[in-house]
Length: 310
Image (cartoon, rainbow, N blue to C red):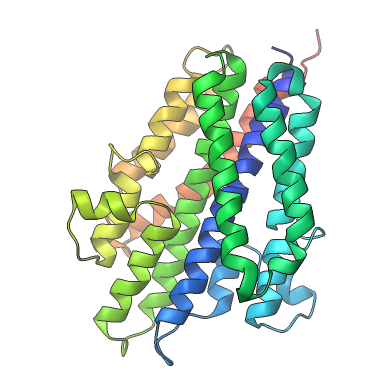
């Protein structure tokens, strides 16, 4: 498979997963803000921190209001972390590689971009936001379903799978670390409010139903975090994604560097325990997982995606 095509498929999948994750996270966070009473609510800056864009937001001297944050995250095409930008990049990568994708996958991604272009600007306010974001989630999931059911289990499928799993890991780590920090300084907050916050976190990662089935109806911070990080049967957990990435790259040529990066991250999950979230070992694990996406992408770019000189 041509190196440039592999890279395009990888990034197409990452941008699609990023679009879906952002749509679900923004929806869940918006609803959580409304559920929490005055004085117990989280700041809008927390949502920006989850996506790692608070500094970018503040550098543009925007007021920290619900509307400005939603506009920045949903509809700002010049924000390379926005939903609109991510969908645009996914469509660009799919267009260039459409000859190796099924016709249905290409058409669904193209229709997603048309939909987002048409409705994102008018979906910043609460009136239209929830339906718009739900539609984005559904269309992204449709692409994943088409890839799973129709795509040959070749390198196209392999790199697509790795891309979306890598993006899931990144969001998991950012969400857990940001919310842990945001709630740790709230000694006066009622425990019931923390339950709402962590249930909202699980909902934003599409794992609340499986948590209640596997752990129980009541949500607490430690159980929720450990479930998202370490539950080996959960497709969205960090450990499940890491092991799935390892399986996907196992038969690739020049994979030794990638396997080292993945194996190091798997060991970090083994050293993590939410009951000791602020311990040195757990903090080191979080730091390594934070860097995993960057290190893996750099290694993949160097060994797989850039054509080597012969």
